Length: 82
Image (tube, rainbow, N blue to C red; front, side, top):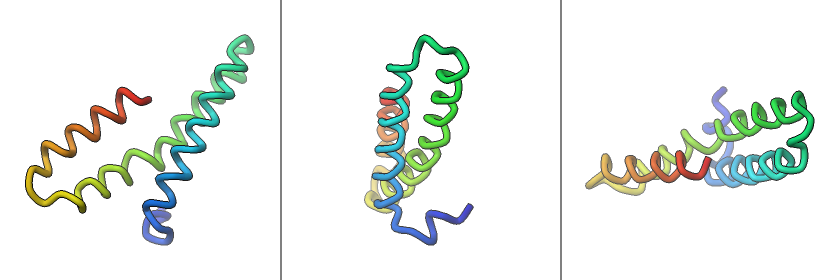
């Protein structure tokens, strides 16, 4: 969408992480209703779209040497976190 070019990547990362946490918390409270739970899991995935690419972009820009190793750690941490 080009949103990362129009806004600060750090700001989008924080917003995405907070929205992801809020949708996961709402999922914990709404686990008895199937359609609500499915909607919240989809919302979590949409919110993570603000986190994954920006985290990789930031990590790639911060580390010039050992970039592959750092990106592997970021992908592993994001996978475990989600």
